[in-house]
Length: 107
Length: 116
Image (cartoon, rainbow over all chains, first blue to last red; front, side):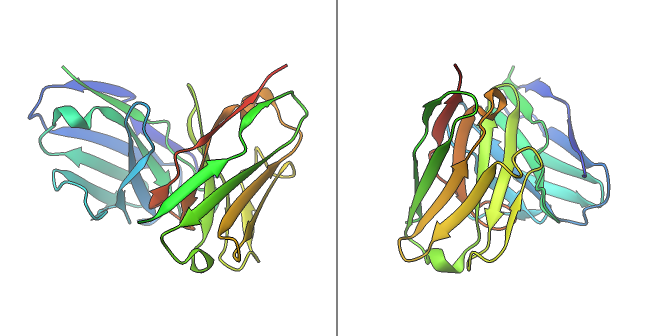
């Protein structure tokens, strides 16, 4: 099965900073990659699918890029409400494995 | 408004069984793939299973294959997960979600605790 990794595992940044999270697949998955945000005590929320398409209602400061084996989630200007753990998920073929998550805090 | 409401979680002993349900509303349930995803503390999110709209195709994570069964009742707009031979490592919040690839809507989750 394809394995998913994320880096860093956690980060701390200031409000207004640009934040980048990387997700890597052990084999190519084309653009079958989604990103989710999970706030403490809340339900996971879909942010991006097809590697770069923003889900309806998601702020435009979130962006995704990449294809094949390397993908990036970018928050262009970090806001206090962005404190969460972010997960990537591959969905080319089952199993639809999630990455281990990246925890984002405010410095 | 899309709503997914899970039920059926609880405390069960290792080797026991539970059946989770997910009541769907606000969309045409019978037209959508559905999935189960779980979240374990310290382990993050794990994709568990998916079922197509007609209930003719199912897929499972290797860790639950042969023990869990996903099913649905389109007449009652309800998704199910039958969990047998439960293990301590199955302890998690179980979410039902809409979609056959990524999940665009999620329920609030139901907690399953496997412990003696």
